[in-house]
Every structure is written in structure tokens, then in C-alpha cells.
Amino acid sequence: MPKSVEDILANAENLSKRIRDFEPSKKDEKDVKVFKALQDAAMQRSLVEKNLVKQIKKARANGYSWSLIGSFLGTTGEAARQRYGDN
Image (cartoon, rainbow, N blue to C red; front, side, top):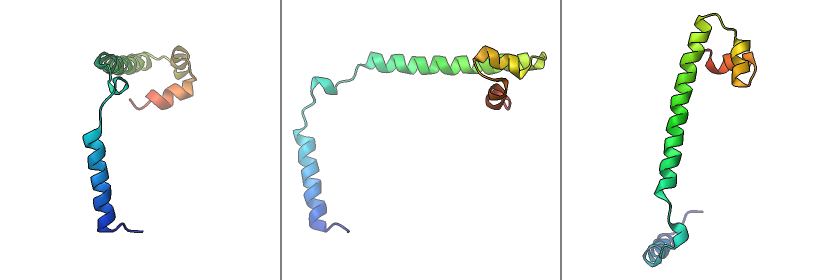
């Protein structure tokens, strides 16, 4: 059911009051170092994945089987081929 203009204005006033009255507590604070560490870890993972793809391409060019590559990755050859075969 659509809200009336009065409902919308009342909700807006309520929201405005909540924003004005908001007082952040210590638990609302976030440690920037934790964010940076997470960002760095994600970047490292990306770099490792790029290197892995590069090495898989080299291995395939040198005749290594998907089965052997999969064993290095802790998976089956078919799973490795499906994930990295088109890269």
C-alpha cells in the first residue's frame, strides 16, 4: 500500500532526528590497519593467482598433463582444466 505524504514526512523527520542524535561509540570505530591488511592480502592473492595462471600456461606448453597440474593444486585434473584451461 502506498504511503501517504504525511507518512513519508513523518518518516523523514524521524530519520533526521536519529541522524542528529547519533553518538558513535567505541564499537562503531573501525581499525584502519585491519582494513589495510585485508586490502593487502587481497592484492597478494591476486598477484599469486596471476603468477599461478602464468606457470600453468608454461606447464601446459611444456606438455604437463592437467592431472599433474591438478595434483599440485590439490584438485583433480578436470577441475584444474575447467578453472584454468581458458586462461
